[in-house]
Image (cartoon, helix red, strand yellow):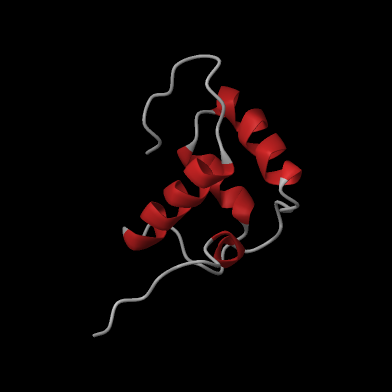
Length: 77
């Protein structure tokens, strides 16, 4: 799911949030699932970097994905 990222390129919190939004939009993840379920969609060797970035921004892996999407914008029906 995440685009191939060149070595030494950091995962920013914005990239992680956008990936979570995309996975929720596609119906692959639910807003109620824990953040650690993102690891299914990120290459294992890159997960530690993602985990560190989440922790740096005070997210716990047990927090819900909806916490990452707190600034979602809704369009009128």
